[in-house]
Amino acid sequence: MLVFVNLFSLIALKDVSGKIVFRDDSKDAKFNKKDEVILRFRQCRDELVKDRERLKSVIYNNDVVNKLKHDYHKLKMETACHRKPQEAETKFNAAELEITKLKSNLETSDFDIKRLKTSLQSAESKVTSVEVEKLRINDDLQSQQNVHIKEMIEKSKAVVAEEVAKRFSENVNKLPRTVVVSPSPHPPPS
Image (cartoon, rainbow, N blue to C red):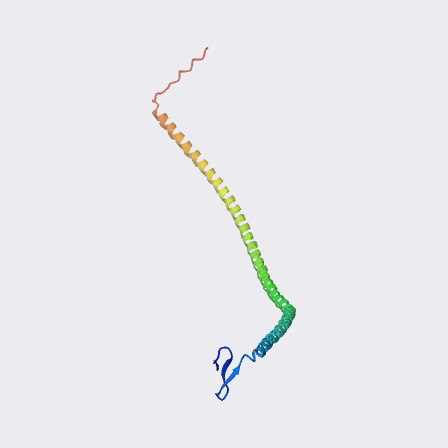
């Protein structure tokens, strides 16, 4: 502990045992300035040493970081080169699987097309048979219509003839009945 006894010349100091030791600063002023300068130089040197150590550490860390970056980049490239065949193989396997699926779909589609073609041919033959049947029915209908028309014409002729005969007889019956005597024939000239 430092205690000032005289402001200009004496400083009271306690040593390790606790005794107060007086010292005259006026005599040691020159030495104190040198000691202060030496102390400042030592502190500056210590700071420079610390800065140098920090700089070495920073340079070392920078070298380590650069090496790590280089190693990382190298590893990244190697991994990418290593992944490319694996990715290509994976893509190839996926493509083969897709091709297999598409072939299966194609076979199913071919089967469906064949089935639909068969159904179409069956439908076309049914349509053809229906058209033939329609033509036969139309022919039968036409012949039946012709026969019916002929029958109707015959019936209507008979009905008309009957009607005419009936009206004629009615008209004849309505006529006054007078006997018409024809004039005697003229005597033959002699």
